[in-house]
Length: 379
Image: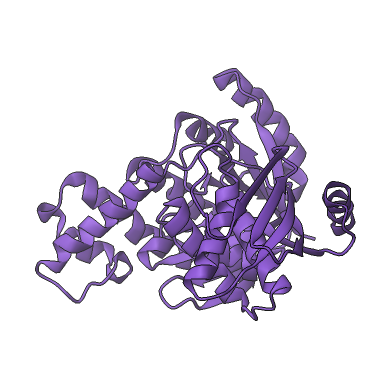
């Protein structure tokens, strides 16, 4: 794992300055509650140990010099020239935060910044939100903006929505900004209330990367957002009391089935049932009912695959390999989908045998090598 001294040393080597501030933010894995955050629903993520780290110092000339160690790339731009960079896409997350701060009236006069992280990219573990939050922390510290963790999370969401162009919800940035390591974070995305939950003892969550590096295509993601909105628009033709899919029960949704195209109904059905699964998962965690939690995870994946259509062949294969074992309680895709990782719940003492089975079977099925990230192991 990276640490503050390593980042500081890299900053000194690159910029020749010894005075710098260090910030970081974690990636996250989502236990359950996918594509519900932008529908004012419930989500249950948890931060992971892998983080994005930043070292930075202030400038006074309005110039931003940014180095990404992971990409071995340097970019520079002016505070008055924030244009989407198609060549170096990682720097857009920095510019997105600056743009969001400017929109809120803050004056930012430039920085020298070095970025390095060990959050797997394209894995559905939210490396982008970790970067956004870490960048916001830099400006909060250097310019004494007095932003709360909630403010920082929403700056990240603004950057994602307005500069990157993805109509995402608040889950990823909330988890990166206020989540506690080793605990699940239940977030009510309607009122932003959240609470941390201790995870069941004797259990492990293991993320398995398909080897398919997900690039969150804004058009596909935004299509799902718009389909959910279309469902609400149809319902509002006769029932204006429904403001989001969060307000619906499965029984109430079925009353509108004949008025919706099938694809719109299925998108709405996933969100409505997923919200129920999140709340049931919370109760399962509280009562240490690992089997129920696992069943809800499998049900979530089935819904994401069949109703929301955001899975892929490789994700489905990994989930099926887990299902065929005698000991994995549950598995599902985690993150937006379209590739990336599955999250698997199993006993601690079975993690090694699980890895061996998955490595063998997944290679046989896909010719790809699975990668493993032990995102949580209870003590």
